[in-house]
Image (cartoon, rainbow, N blue to C red; front, side, top):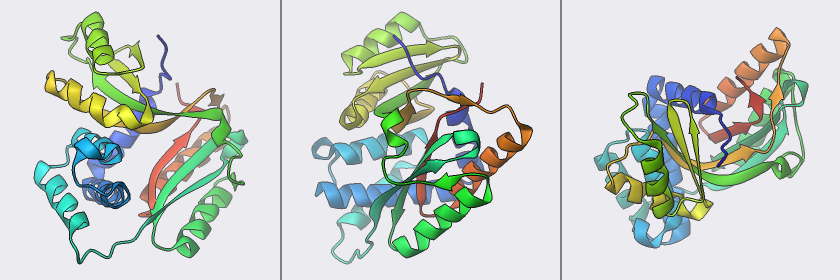
Length: 244
């Protein structure tokens, strides 16, 4: 079975979350509030979107108390938080495809900011659908085997029994793929078997990758990703830059 083999992207995201844990938790909490409100339930068993966000929160080491408080806040009658999901698409240096997922309470603030980042670092924001056709939406669960104490065949069978649609072994990590709506349930089933995750979330997985050769392009692409990640309205940044 095959995977997208881009653990570098996950590592970079994880490192940023470790360095800016508070910001990372704030973004996940915002996503959780939206999941509760749109799904109409604070019970992950009856709200697949919420189950997926909870899996993401646990993989990011968000404390259970924080998760519980956030769900209770979203269910509260006095909660007036109102965010809408907005997706922006465009191109980075040398035509790297970039998808930016945001949750915002003010499009007039978010859209110009995202456009500015693209323009400043050698890219341009495009029309909806200009690059998303070359990505597949999948649940992706990353399990580390850095200590080599996990058996690949056992993990694969456990993943498939939990409802995974695909599995890949890439060096020191295992990549478990699911249907987008099944990510939370599969993560919960694997967690019950004792597995811990480096990452568990719904991702936009590229169908192909672009290698950047120019040092200037590499520098600008790194800055573009960093600026987008640092924006409070931006939840996720997906791209097809081959960083191997």
